[in-house]
Amino acid sequence: MTRLGVAPAALSRAEGGWPLDGALRLGDRVLSFGAASHLRACLLLLLIGLASFLPGLASLQPMDRDEPRFAQASKQMLETGDLVDIRFQAEARHKKPVGIYWAQAAAVAAGEALGVPQARTQIGLYRIPSLLGALAAILLTYWAGLAPLDRRRALLAAALFSACIMLSAEARLAKTDALLTACSIAVFGALARAWLGRARLERRRGPASLGTALVFWLGLALGILVKGPMVPLFAGLAAFVLCLREGSARWLLDLRPRLGLLITLAVVAPWFLAIAWKSGGAFFGEAVGRDMLGKVGTGAEKHWGPPGAYALAFFATFWPGAAFAALSLPFAWARRGEEAVALLLAWIVPMWLIFEAVPTKLPHYVLPLMPAVAILTVLALSRGALDPRRPGARWVAGLVVLIPVGLTLGVSLAAWRLDHVLPLAALPLLLAACLLAGLAWAAFARGAREGAGQRAGQETRQETGEGALVLAVAASVVLSGAVFGLTQPVLQSLKVSPRLAAIRDALPCEAPRVASLGLREPSLVFTVGTDLAMLNSGAETIAFLREGGCRLVLVEDRFAAEFTAAEGGQPLSPVGRVTGFNINGGKPVGVSAYAALPGSTP
Image (cartoon, rainbow, N blue to C red; front, side, top):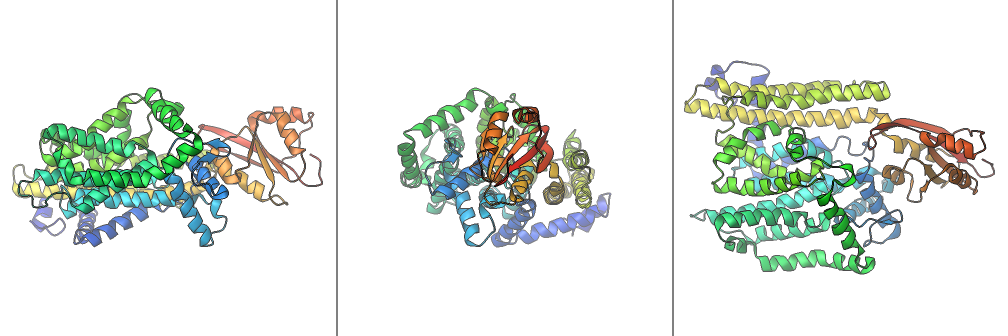
């Protein structure tokens, strides 16, 4: 049986035609080109990743609240030269280890060395570690997929993961999660080789190599520096489940635990000892006692969600692969005794259940599990388990169309309501993404028309299923460019803090002191400056303006009356005004700017 696109008999049996046949042939050729060698596979995955993640990387405003907190703390490391303590303005930020801050500070320092103007306030530079982490996660998913899959299907699994919405979002945010995912999947790939190596009686691949062990322990150590105990928790829980299944832990000796312990201590101990000495142990009390255990006990920072929330959100966060992943569940249950399936379930299920049980729910928490979901989905496809003839299968697969259609309508409505514009430049790409998603569904449904029980029909169903995944990946790449590259820049109402910083920059004096009354978003601190003063009353605001020199105050509308009353009832003339929409609060916001220039009296 030839590959899809060059099998005239198979195509002649199927209804349809252009554009579906042409799209399937093109997708098959691209996949075949990438699967010809590891180098080609990696280059193709990098191309997909860059096409998905680069649009909007620099133009997307700092996204409150977590991202600017990370970026501001990294900026303060550069300002103070203190690479041990982590601070947001004067407040100690003892929630996460130092890894992400070092990575962001290094990226910004490199930007400064290369002559990037105002590098320390360019949010795109702080996002470079996340971009690199997302690209590394894609390549490591391919490497992990090679343990249970052949090259072509490992490439398809990695491409499916690269297309998921949650990875696309985290690649553009200066946070920990993209790097955490890269570390996690490196550990998973090494664990997979140790597990499957011991399971093959012929030992064709043999025990895990020294290189595999080094990948495991370096991924573990770097993961600890990025987000504390999360990577050890992922790996330890999966290994524990597999050891119970095996009735022995001897297979883990292939990973050289003694050497690994030394590597881990060498990587993580210096900073942990330094921060323990500098903070007097406060870092561990804050990071473990308040941040981690606080999220376990209650819905921290208003992020509570009921059990099952991740399962429902999965159909959006893992789009476009979520519908196909759902269809692989019966296969996973039926084949749970197989070595590869047991490995994937050991990585996914225990941690997923823990996340569902913990009250604090954030969509990106399950991101490190999604590469294994992608591999499991493609494994099910390779065994003929994604059968469109099963009751309801085509309806489930049809969910792949909902996200691009919903986003096309949603972003158009948002642009019109918030800024009274339509994203006309993005509409062709948005509609193209809808078309590609529709073709992905049509390709999957085509397999239902093949004769039951015929070997040729089964192979063609696998090929059309493979083509459906390729088209779904293409839809995601196009959608990413449309939403982040062409639609997001026109939504000026969302860019409140950068527009306020522009008012500061337009003042006819250098280095003005700035204060804010009402608006306290971290993005404002990042864009305006570390010394931004947060005021609590109209009287404090007037006193700040009268202290002399070049000064600017930003007064949110809900404090406008108090500010005017403090001035004596005679309203000042603002030097600028910004209205928009606060994503974090989910409400419209208006801010007026008042200035006191040298030699003037406010």
